[in-house]
Amino acid sequence: MGAAHEYGTFLDVLLPVKSKGKSGAPKSKHEYSRSVPASLRPLRGRERFQAAQLEATISHRIFVEYAPDITARCQFRETGTDRVFHPFSVIDIDERHAEMEILASEVV
Image (cartoon, rainbow, N blue to C red; front, side, top):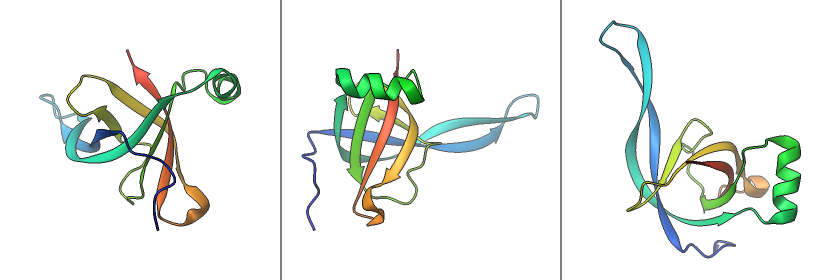
Protein backbone atom coordinates (compact mmCIF):
# COMPACT_ATOMS: atom_id res chain seq x y z
CA MET A 1 0.00 0.00 0.00
CA GLY A 2 1.58 3.31 -1.08
CA ALA A 3 1.45 6.50 0.89
CA ALA A 4 -1.02 9.15 -0.12
CA HIS A 5 1.54 11.94 0.09
CA GLU A 6 4.90 12.57 -1.56
CA TYR A 7 7.65 12.67 1.06
CA GLY A 8 9.99 15.46 0.03
CA THR A 9 12.00 15.95 3.21
CA PHE A 10 13.24 14.12 6.28
CA LEU A 11 12.39 14.87 9.90
CA ASP A 12 14.37 13.79 12.95
CA VAL A 13 12.07 12.23 15.54
CA LEU A 14 12.95 13.48 19.03
CA LEU A 15 11.42 11.24 21.71
CA PRO A 16 10.80 12.48 25.25
CA VAL A 17 13.21 11.18 27.89
CA LYS A 18 12.77 11.75 31.61
CA SER A 19 15.83 12.45 33.70
CA LYS A 20 16.80 14.16 36.92
CA GLY A 21 18.34 17.61 37.13
CA LYS A 22 21.26 18.60 39.35
CA SER A 23 18.87 19.21 42.23
CA GLY A 24 17.29 15.78 41.78
CA ALA A 25 14.06 17.22 40.45
CA PRO A 26 12.60 15.40 37.44
CA LYS A 27 13.04 17.11 34.10
CA SER A 28 12.25 16.03 30.59
CA LYS A 29 14.21 16.50 27.42
CA HIS A 30 14.00 15.15 23.90
CA GLU A 31 16.62 12.87 22.35
CA TYR A 32 17.18 11.92 18.72
CA SER A 33 15.60 8.60 17.78
CA ARG A 34 15.72 8.39 13.98
CA SER A 35 15.00 10.26 10.75
CA VAL A 36 11.76 9.59 8.85
CA PRO A 37 10.64 10.66 5.37
CA ALA A 38 7.94 13.31 5.63
CA SER A 39 5.71 15.71 3.78
CA LEU A 40 5.99 19.09 5.52
CA ARG A 41 3.77 21.93 4.41
CA PRO A 42 2.59 25.19 5.93
CA LEU A 43 -1.11 25.63 6.41
CA ARG A 44 -2.82 27.65 3.69
CA GLY A 45 -5.22 30.52 4.31
CA ARG A 46 -8.42 28.55 4.81
CA GLU A 47 -6.65 25.80 6.75
CA ARG A 48 -4.96 28.38 8.98
CA PHE A 49 -8.33 30.02 9.66
CA GLN A 50 -9.90 26.68 10.59
CA ALA A 51 -6.91 25.70 12.74
CA ALA A 52 -7.09 29.02 14.57
CA GLN A 53 -10.53 28.03 15.79
CA LEU A 54 -8.96 25.01 17.51
CA GLU A 55 -5.43 26.10 18.35
CA ALA A 56 -3.99 29.49 17.41
CA THR A 57 -0.40 28.34 17.05
CA ILE A 58 -0.76 25.50 14.52
CA SER A 59 1.35 26.43 11.50
CA HIS A 60 2.18 23.19 9.65
CA ARG A 61 0.65 19.92 8.53
CA ILE A 62 3.07 16.98 8.50
CA PHE A 63 2.53 13.53 7.00
CA VAL A 64 4.75 10.56 7.94
CA GLU A 65 4.50 6.81 7.68
CA TYR A 66 2.78 5.24 10.67
CA ALA A 67 4.94 4.54 13.72
CA PRO A 68 3.39 3.68 17.10
CA ASP A 69 6.03 5.61 19.08
CA ILE A 70 5.25 8.92 17.36
CA THR A 71 2.93 10.80 19.70
CA ALA A 72 2.04 14.39 20.56
CA ARG A 73 4.83 14.27 23.21
CA CYS A 74 7.51 13.95 20.51
CA GLN A 75 9.23 16.81 18.77
CA PHE A 76 10.40 16.94 15.17
CA ARG A 77 13.43 18.66 13.67
CA GLU A 78 13.85 19.09 9.94
CA THR A 79 16.97 17.05 9.18
CA GLY A 80 20.03 19.25 8.60
CA THR A 81 18.37 22.42 9.92
CA ASP A 82 17.44 24.06 13.22
CA ARG A 83 13.70 24.07 12.42
CA VAL A 84 11.80 22.38 15.28
CA PHE A 85 8.11 21.48 15.33
CA HIS A 86 5.89 20.76 18.34
CA PRO A 87 2.88 18.56 17.49
CA PHE A 88 -0.59 19.31 18.84
CA SER A 89 -2.40 16.46 17.16
CA VAL A 90 -1.20 13.11 15.82
CA ILE A 91 -3.80 11.25 13.77
CA ASP A 92 -3.61 7.70 12.40
CA ILE A 93 -5.35 8.40 9.07
CA ASP A 94 -8.38 6.13 8.70
CA GLU A 95 -6.89 4.02 11.55
CA ARG A 96 -5.09 1.90 8.95
CA HIS A 97 -1.58 2.14 10.49
CA ALA A 98 -0.22 3.32 7.14
CA GLU A 99 0.18 7.10 7.44
CA MET A 100 -0.10 9.73 10.17
CA GLU A 101 -1.18 13.37 9.94
CA ILE A 102 0.43 15.72 12.45
CA LEU A 103 -0.74 19.27 13.12
CA ALA A 104 2.19 21.18 14.59
CA SER A 105 3.64 24.59 15.31
CA GLU A 106 7.11 25.66 14.28
CA VAL A 107 9.24 26.92 17.15
CA VAL A 108 10.70 30.30 16.19
